[in-house]
Image (tube, rainbow, N blue to C red; front, side, top):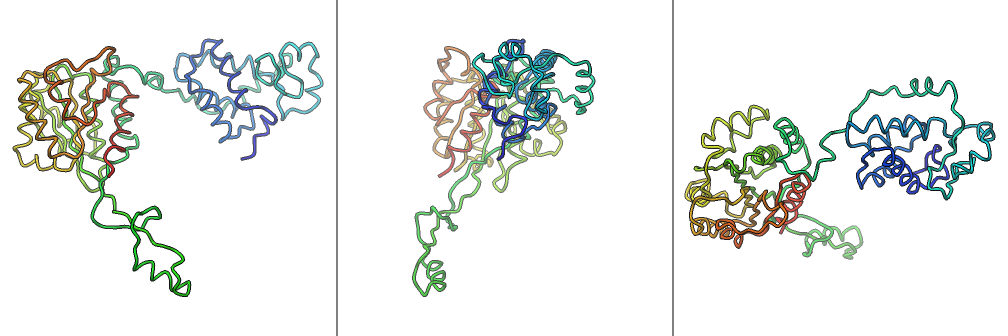
Length: 399
């Protein structure tokens, strides 16, 4: 892509690093990934005016609402009277020599050694504020206040923020776990050769097999069984996990997932979470789960699932159990239930939000009994760890 006229002859990486340094010096908390995102935005949008540059910087480098005033001040101080590649040569010639040396850049906009942004500045003009106000005509789009809190545990969020996060998770992309079926499909990297299709294609080349048609097993969606602990110790996390389960139901393609919640008893929530309205779905869940935020009997509830007709859904499925492992049943009850689940399921994932705490060890009896039967244990206590769970869900279930 052709580089924008506004930044002709400018090293975008050095420009982004210098801009971020000025913003941080002005009190703006720029994320570590900010410079890379800013360079990507410059290459894709190719800004040709200060207004476009302003929005490219603001949308990629500002994550908090309270940093907007500091960002505007730094941008005005650096770029309000900048000499750019679009300015006429007459403006460039007006720059005093001592001013150019003090900024560490030449009048043509080449990057200097002073670490400043690769533009020289002219004395302030009287019509600068008026022109800037006329150029910036877009509405104020505030950055998300949750973007800079991806590493904070869900216990630090209030109920309204948890609802916002849940709605965002339902709209996020999810790669569905897959399985191999007995049917074959054409694929250039398949291990088997379809002789009939190869011979039919050789008719075009005088019966010489110039192109080999390869096949592989067709991939189908794998069933997902999600079991969520809604006891009192899981109260800050159960809403997020229920939103994840509802997103799985809404985005299922052929194999419909099964969703259960448990505290002192097991409740099937698949039909309740299938409603198209999130508020209605959560209202139905609250009405169905009468024992939420109570005690916990993990082993007994998992055993109940296996003896009911819904237990057949576990066969060949990816089973996700979300619980902190605090159980009032003896550990051997949970161990027997997990052994039966392990013998039926294809993959077992345990989400323990306590695993994200420093120095965590699965020392409780229930967690120590269940861990040998799990393929992987994740924390899923922050937005970043939820993304790790979604990646593990998509990659570990493909055969």
